[in-house]
Length: 111
Length: 115
Image 1 (cartoon, chains in turn purple, orange):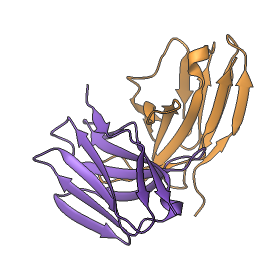
Image 2: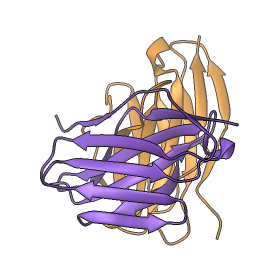
Image 3: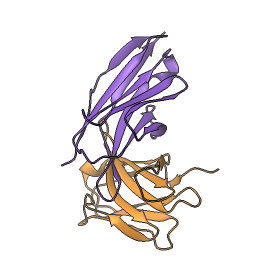
Image 4: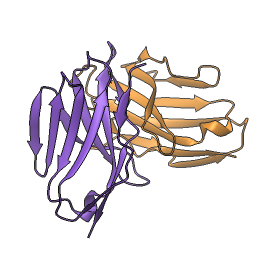
């Protein structure tokens, strides 16, 4: 059973702080990794994808991947109340390239 | 570019009844996915189509769930008969093609309540 684990949270940070979200995965053969944001009552929205070791930056978001440690993280700089949502880590696994999702981490940014 | 369309958005049925959900993917997307998301959980893949062929249905409860994508574009997911534990959001997603670098985009989902 290929698994994706996330801290369930909730994670609470003050406005303007850095929020750090973590994810580990069990399948060493995984090649691609995604972060989705899901507001309450809405569907998941893709915010970052990362395929190789290291950092990938997009605006206030940075995804970090370490395949040796089977670890992927998402940093949100200058957190805003509008960033309050559940963040889902998804890992592409298996020969059919299906996505396995973690349970998500609920982030609350306090004004 | 229009996103993934789904209908209905909400559905309430009694247990043992049947229900069907419809999905139209992003234009030109060959791969279509149906997920089930139970409250507090991440989405779980039910079935994956490449054009009109099934790629993976290993987690689809085939005794009660069925899905088709006859013309390789839109798709229907059916539950018959429904159980209380089927209460969830059913999400449709699509990607341009099948492969590790192809990103999946989700529709708004259908919230199913089984009473």
